[in-house]
Amino acid sequence: MTPGDLTAETVTIVGHGGDPVEAYLAAPVGGPPVGGVVVIHHMPGYDAGTKEITRKIAANGYLALMPNLYFREAPGASPDDAAAAARANGGVPDDRLVGDVAGSMAHLASLPVSNGRLATIGYCSGGRQSLLAACSLDLDAAVDCYGAFALSAPPDGFPMAVTPIGDKVADLSCPLLGLFGSEDQYPGPEEVVELERLLVAAGKEVEFHSYEGAGHAFFNTDRPSFRAEAAGDGWERIWAFFGRHLTG
Image (cartoon, rainbow, N blue to C red):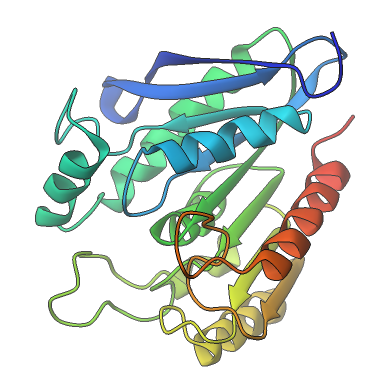
């Protein structure tokens, strides 16, 4: 086998409340035991783009598992239909998210090729959820990619019924990497600055970067919001961050 070889498959994990939850698992082939990453998908759901991110993480030498957070709302449905059903319900409840991430972590840790070190990474709504998981569970690292509504509630009519989690930052269990666009509205630059201030004041290890000329979803290659330079630098920072905290 050569570096970058991987396997990918759909599996079933035990999620919140003991529920069986569909998940997408990608794993590097060959080599020593490696760290694992729970990939938390964006608001559009368990789609082809986020599966590609899961495989990308595996191709770079880590176990990667993405739970389908909308599986209960619409089992067997297309990502678009499942996301619509989830939005109609206000998104994923925080306690259920934490339970599904905990189940994902347990699944990764049980694999023979796991070294026991675990991280989360999330995009859009998943960025907030990555932070929430890191404040609720014992992780080795977490990445927040432009996670909205960590410190402020969504505006009226927004398809997410979530509450701010600023009161949880003192419970952050691990180093946090945050990647944001300076032209984003959710989260806006002021909220990013305030979140970093709260984390630093709580004595947490944080590394935040904001990219000029980039808005929301700058990692998403399928959208006009994609910014190649920002995304390229962001991935390099992610690999360096995982390399520091998931190896050994």
